[in-house]
Image (tube, rainbow, N blue to C red; front, side, top):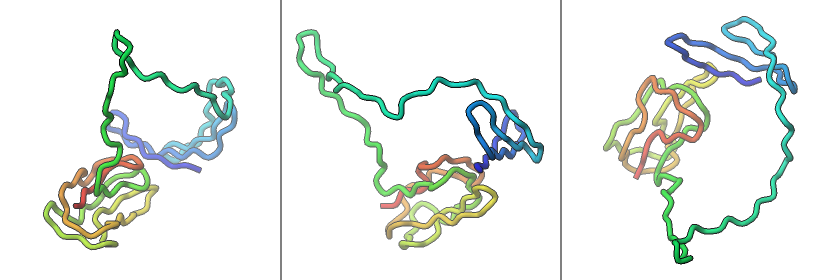
Length: 143
């Protein structure tokens, strides 16, 4: 069973997905049960064999060196699951200790305390009360 909260055109919907078959899903939306018919999808293999990618080259055949942005923000406290921020317990410049609650997140109708995983100073707060966040989003940057 998976639960979600959606806001569509200003209307809030509590959606619970109970059972998903190949073409039918049992879904509850704001307390009403539905059987949702889904389009059958083509079965894909469990794994795919990939050939090594060829690096980009110039017209002369020389490799083009590119840099990718860092995927990890240093010192970021990330959300462990999707939800809504209901409380921010710190401000920029605060000193925090390991284990101290910095954010309170509502997910699946429960309040979840998000603790700091390190000691340090709050450099940046990436969210505000009422923001919706996805799993893995940066919440607070601690340096």
